[in-house]
Length: 285
Image (cartoon, rainbow, N blue to C red; front, side, top):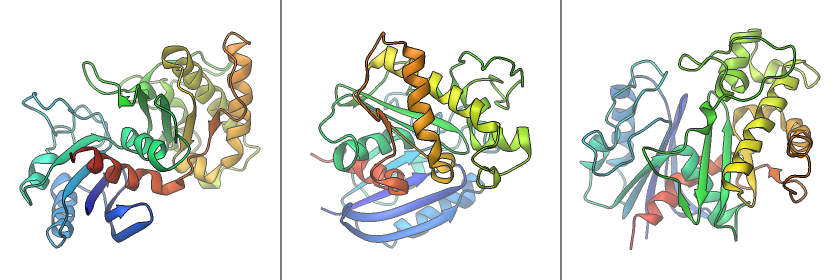
């Protein structure tokens, strides 16, 4: 079977056509602009392709309840112009094939479980630290569900002693995303992630905050492994070792973790696009 996948990100969208990670047949990238511009560009790409199922892995929050009147739409996002945007509707009208719609981080988690650092695990978490911070939390082989999908990037955590910066999240101020995302670092220091040197004091707050997020995930769901990727970690891979150390210190031997528990995604920057393919595969019998 041939699958199409759309990774709808905050700054760019990757559209791929593949049979799997070792057989990617086509790949296109479009900038994330307004909903009309972005979805129009995606439609033009998909309209030229033949495929048997479509996976859409989108930034959130999104409505993933198939029985909801707003299913397939973006919800209360801080991204200008996207609140209420219908993502699934325009793409579903292109071809009568099964469609799966979920968050970009849930898709990436499922891809890592199928082909990467989560192979063999039914309980796994994937964290992306980029423009925003999202968590794909898979429990007993399925993304968590309830009132909506997981939004652990917006939990509030204990602050690093002496740091009282209010944070950048328009909804929660000093939540994890408001303290440790690429946008938060730019708002606080005026620098891009790639321009901050490894010894910059910004990384003390980022390491502390992300370790606190991992502490909450371990205590809430106890996944066998956490993979952490995204633009911030791509540019600053040195952060993984101190995050692991801070997490172990924070848990204080209450829960013992394997070595290198928080790891880089084995699929690297392909975890997101392949996440959309993994979703498409789950949509087919």
